[in-house]
Image (cartoon, rainbow over all chains, first blue to last red; front, side, top):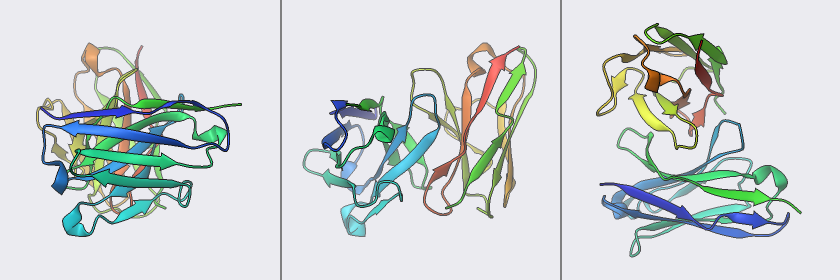
Amino acid sequence: EVHLVESGGGLVKPGRSLRLSCETSGFTFNIAWMTWVRQAPGKGLECLARIKDITSGGATDYAAPVKGRFTISRDDSKNTVYLQMNSLQTDDTAVYYCTTLDGYGYTRRWGQGTLVTVSS
Amino acid sequence: EIVLTQYPATLSLSPGERATLSCRASQSVGTYLAWFQQKPGQAPSLLIHDASIRATGIPARFSGSGSGTDFTLTIDSLGPEDFAVYYCQQRYSWLTFGGGTKVEIK
């Protein structure tokens, strides 16, 4: 069974950094493409970052609002994907989900999410 | 960025009725569109991909149609578990989501 478990969320002051982790199991992580998606309270969904597998060069892509501030990375030895978030702003407050991308390119499996609150 | 607009924002229906949800893209996405269901406190779950293909385990009362810029999700005979928020997602260019349609009990 596929599991994705996010961690690392919490309360952080504006301008500070936070690193989220997503530990996975139940599938072949090293050939999986992964994303981070967030959902602000009471709002819709926003895909932030994508990382391809090593055979695709581990290429990364970012949404405009986070490009240059957030970095997605992976450790295939730990079946884990990360999201390093720098220069956090109040409008980064959201639940952050990691997801797998299926062979069709859609966000197939989702974790339960981790809440990040940016507030002074 | 491709913008997806969902309408209506809220759909008030009774159990057993048919729900018709719409999603319009700001430019053609071919059939690279998916539908998700999200219940309170839960992550979204995939219902339909490539506009009309049901994901594994999804009941036949859920169906998708459309191509280009206009798409529809139809739920035949709403069950109590179907009252939720539904999002469309395109993968033609990056990955973007619509704003959602809430299907609530009338």
